[in-house]
Image 1 (cartoon, rainbow, N blue to C red):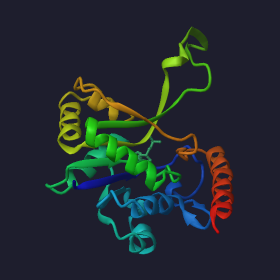
Image 2: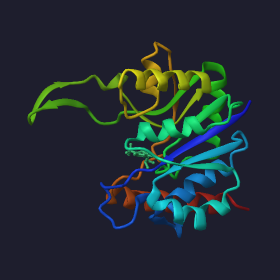
Image 3: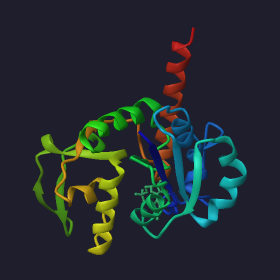
Length: 234
Ligand code: C5P
């Protein structure tokens, strides 16, 4: 099975409030994006990677990041929204691609094992979203007032990777653009086709680094991972 990963990393990171794009902020001496790409380089189930970046970071990536990651086959420029960036990645996929794993560049704590689980499940179900159960109580709010309290027992927070048969995600994206529909994840476009999407339990550590607070949490996760690796090593 030919498996291609698409890594959208073309966001401007405006919620971070720093002077450099968030994908290039360093964690443990490496840009966030390099941590993400490392997991895909280390995952035997993935054959190649299409990286989607903004024009601002293309030069830096070409010089300092890409030479280290052999699976990155193509680098394409992103679009205005995440969905536009992923669509450009899909258009760049090779004709023989059978499965596509879509993963946010700003989620550096994904592991090769989780990527493989998502691909394996996709082989059986054609569409997989990684998600975690909601821990807090969720309310619907309008104009500063609670409208209602949702039953959290059926609520999950989606993450990436989201993994699909290529033909299915291609059809979903084409339909979304024909109808001018935008969503904030890929699964939503497949759901609109009436296709069932399987849910794979992810990890609360698989955070998306969006704000400075997330960066502080990321440092803690990193220390925890290092401590566990140190304990496990002989
Ligand atoms: O904006 P959001 O937090 O949903 O971004 C998730 C991922 O999509 C990030 O890795 C970000 O860089 C990427 N993105 C993109 N193109 C955009 C906006 C976001 O590739 N126009």
